[in-house]
Amino acid sequence: MNINIDIESSSTTMSALSSPVRLQIMLWILDPRAHFPEQRDGDLVEDGVCVGFITEKAGLSQPTVSSHMKKLADAGLVTGKKFGNWMFYKPDRNRLQEIGTSLADAARIEPVKRAAV
Image (tube, rainbow, N blue to C red):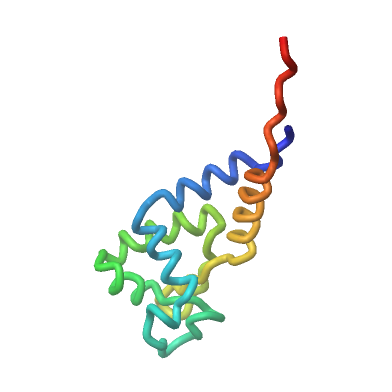
């Protein structure tokens, strides 16, 4: 059986999503119009969500949220864009699709049966 998953990249991704806070943030920014008000700068979907809005919704400090967003960005799950003094983040939907497809493909592979001894 040959399961084609990049272990290093996938473990970084899974580690980033293992935090309940980061997973919640990902779910929010995957559907930003349902979870955040319109922004003065940038479109919620096209440009991403302002870290200030994420901070407010999460009820955490800005440095804490920035640390969480860095972990998600390092895993390739979000991309960041700077507008003035603020960072805006949006999900990397292609990367999420790749991970989901890899795991779904691996789940469909039947294990090799051992020969009777």
